[in-house]
View 1 (tube, rainbow, N blue to C red):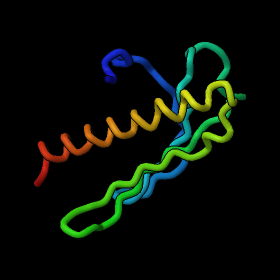
View 2: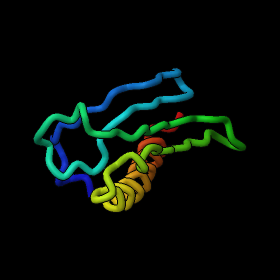
View 3: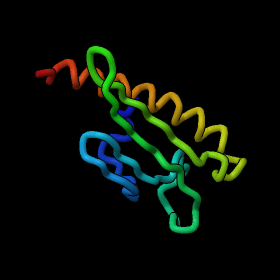
View 4: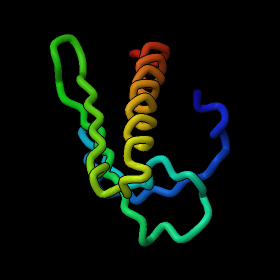
Length: 101
């Protein structure tokens, strides 16, 4: 699923880092074209949090701010990112299974 994007750069702005607990960044979801000035385009905030859970750790991924994305792109951004985060969650699970201590 991600192979077409392999090697494609994208910009993020790190908002918060709390080691072993939280990582949050801003990005431009579902950009149709990497051209242009992104500084004036709205971003969403993606937050990864880790919390203790029975038998392990719970990873929660939340992307907020889609309401700020222009209406013409909002539905595509939501649909693309929703499926994308599900896919990335599976990649994280596979990685952890291979590297479990």
